[in-house]
Amino acid sequence: MNYEVKKITPNIFLDNLFINFPLWFPISYIYLAVNYPEKSNFLFILVLFLFAETHFASTWLFLFDKQNWPWLKTNSYKLFFLPLYLIILIAFTWFFTPSLILILHYLASGWHVTKQSTGILKIYGANSKIYQFFVYFSSFTCLAIGLKNPGILKSTLDFNFINLILLVLFISYIAILTFSLLGKLNKKILIALPLLTGILIYIPILFFDNLATATAVGVGMHWCQYIAIMWSMNIRKNLNQKSNLLNLSFTLKRVLFVFLYALIMTSLAVIGMPNIIKNTTQYSYFYLIPLIFQLYHFYIDGFIWKFSDKHIKKSVLPFLFKNP
Image (cartoon, rainbow, N blue to C red; front, side, top):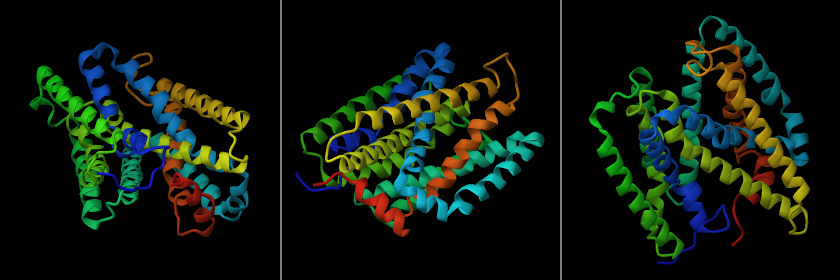
């Protein structure tokens, strides 16, 4: 069945791979974490660097765009000064109770991630209140249960059963991508895929007692989505400004910034985490630094994707989708 659908990446196959249904990420992560548990810390740090922090860094591409500077200046209080006051409050609170800030971070992340999931539903024609309800209900139910009792369902799975499930999921996923590549994917299935992605993101917190692993497994799909959306949009905008020719210097500078940012933030997170360096049991202020930047990402994203704003509608929306 052939049909027209808005595309963010160059084709619907890449949309399905990175935005619509990036199931390859949790399948790969779970397989490696379960079969090579001795490498779990390395795996998490690698994913933190390559996906999580590059996704956070990609937000800054909006701030680097000179066309946005007048809008940023006009809205400087809510975009910069108000967050600065909140940062001071967060740093003060962290000194007394880091756990409270970590919980607030999880909740803010849950809201931010779920908002993106429902936004992607709209892109693929699933703009239904009931679909949005399913995503919000799944996310915050899993967070409420998982933050209190992480890995509550872990005992229901064993090693062989997990690998069997992963094999079935992998075969099914390859079939879906193949139909997508051939242009034979039913429209109802296409609509169901982002819905399923949004519902699945926080379910891992029920099966993994390690919150870092649980987050990476599920929210990793969100990271893939955000990176694909942000970079597709920025490359498209750059092409438009440079007479349809990619400015390599422009692009390489931003790629370098993103990976340098990711390296610095990942390093600070690793130093500040418990049980990785010096076998500590407490988070340090080093960990608070990337945490603050992550919270700022959650905050400012609420403005830079707000298409009811005239500037955002003009600066972002025209470059969000690939031209037919």
